[in-house]
Image 1 (tube, one colour):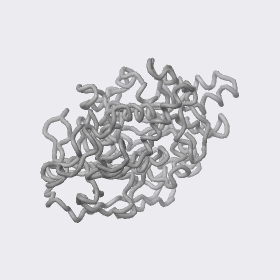
Image 2: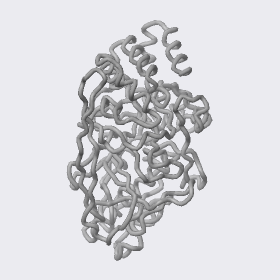
Image 3: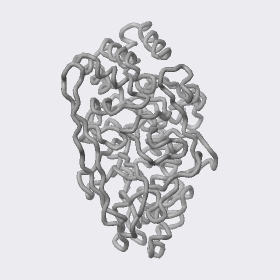
Image 4: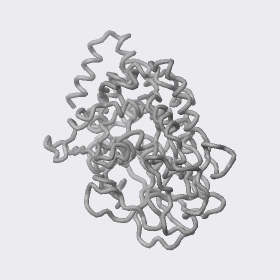
Amino acid sequence: MRRIGVFVLAIASLDSAFAQADFRLTGGDTTIFDASREAFTQPLDNLDPRSLGRFFSGDTVFNANWVNASSTVQGRDGLGPLFNARSCSACHFKDGRGAPPTSNKDSLGFVFRLSIPLGEKNQRPTPHPIYGGQLSPYAVQEARSEAAFTVSYQEIEGTYPDGSIYRIQKPIYRFSDWNYGDPSEFQFSPRAAPGVFGLGLLESIPEDSLLARVDESDRDSDGISGRPNWVWSASSQSKALGRFGWKANKSSLRDQSAAAFQGDIGITSHLFPSENHTDAQPNLDSLPSGGEPELNPDDLDDVVFYLRTLAPPASRFEDENSFRNGLETFSMIGCAQCHTPEHRTGDVSDIRALSHQTIYPFTDLLLHDMGEGLGGDRADFDATGNEWRTPPLWGLGLIPKVNGHSRLLHDGRARSIEEAILWHSGEAESSRQAFMNLAKAKRDSLIEFIQNL
């Protein structure tokens, strides 16, 4: 709350023109002013023009469709044999957000993490002995996919204190056609692909700044107990602070990218040299490979550079008052305690454009218990099944234009910002109740504020 006060006072101290420019600059000097379908695809506005060639090289790899091994497409072969998508952009279309599938054949941008119960904390999730760490609904022609699934919804109706009716939906998942044997008991956790813009700025926030917000024992008795997820980093070969993924289970964009190539596309790299199938899936090891590793290290470097230099779009408020009034309500009901508005990046020697930027992503990148409704039984390093990393809110209102849907939360169950708020519980229960107790005009105004971030 103290940081909110500083934030508002800083705006108030500026004249109107500068204040308007400041509150729209979500990424500081990196911010781009684009509210079109290409809003998430642009390079940092202050990126050195000499680096644009590398940015577009990374863009090419990100959008490339991988094909079966031993094809005529050198450097882009080695798909699978099990996979979720043929390219990075298939899940992160226009660098934006995925949605829940309408059928098993429409599952791009949506995955299921699999595991068996963890032993002690600070251990990596234990992959399923047959189906590994992620369900693959697709396979190359010579192989069989792992399983099929369907998603249906139970509608839940509720009433605001003012008598207004709301409806939210709870997902129900069913699996079938297990092609490599009965999975017996297993843990699963659904994931919708998040947007990938602005990640370089989040990676550039100093670790000490994030850890200063940790309050695991709730010392200030505000009901908020944000805590870090300490994870294993493949690139540093050490324990590191998690920042990326719905449970903050990856510490860097290099780890995140290489893991996604392996898990989602079946493309090996020097960081993840093993294929994404298990010894219990016969005959897959005998299928052709695209090389050892299949992903050229230079291509991985270019993709990481691309992700680090994708810019956040500017906020879209009509005037300073609409921003300040919305922020006041957002802070008053406690949203800003987890969705921290302001951060400052540190010194980034290799990409100077990311250095020393005041940014407004509205996240603390920490884990918070969101209650049983959004929880599950699958832990991930230090994160329990009920704990999720606070997602950034910048650009949220542009998802319908860029990606053609408005689905939110880790599994896309929420069809709107309102539904996403109503699913908050656990540490966010008091904020949800405060939101419900607002007059309808105030609720609508808060939703509009979030849409314009």
